[in-house]
Image 1 (cartoon, rainbow, N blue to C red):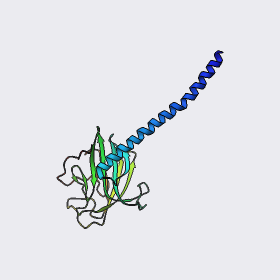
Image 2: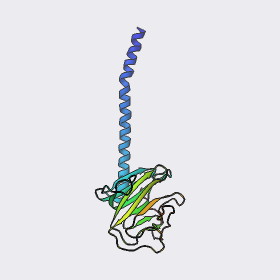
Image 3: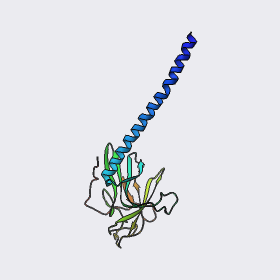
Image 4: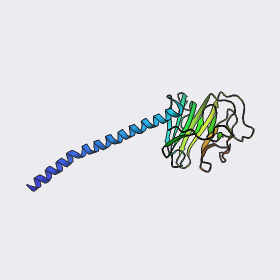
Length: 206
């Protein structure tokens, strides 16, 4: 009799287990859906409804959640100058937003110019740019690296820059010392300082 009861109990436990697993999976899926909705809302706040999230996570390797979002101009061309970079895409705007203790702030903006909260990125063209070719990669140690190439821009560069001139590629990476996304010089060994701008603190998105 005791053996029969034990077997019956095991059968009941076996019947209930899939229900618990299914419930846990449903909760996990629900949490993921809520997170995706939140990220979509954040990206739309940054660049509007026609926004695409290209990368998400600790992109700067600074322990904070970031999003790389863009307004795509056209389908990816499928070309890039190195296999480790994502396929080059054309964008009108791009931004990186960061979640610092629940507050989402813009830490990099690419519209007609390349800017961080302290100013225009060194080496970037002074002429207004209507579109950019963007390629990016996320390295396990260095984090996100982006290559911005102006498309259809006029001549012009800042005299103090030692980086890219108009029409040339600007490489951007997180500077852990300055705690900013900055451009690199042509050797990719030194960060370039920003040119002054009226835009001072980062805009709070949420």
